[in-house]
Image (cartoon, rainbow, N blue to C red):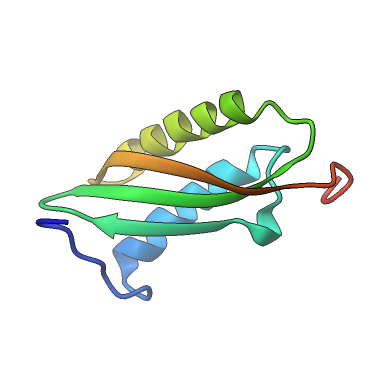
Length: 102
């Protein structure tokens, strides 16, 4: 990707954005947090791409959950930091038993 840079995972900016995304994920009861990962790719100026690889509980409405997460993560990042989430990608890794983290 032209103009994109991946910062060290220990950078303050990286950790801040991962924390914000994780806070949004915690609010979704359909997400299995233990198996969900968040990654950040920084672009020119203050733009970034957030990639979430999620495990969703079986029976959840996948598309509405993912759309809500995309909107919420982008909005929270814009409000809490100088960054703008240019893209928020949600990848569903697998479906899990609905009893997990219940």
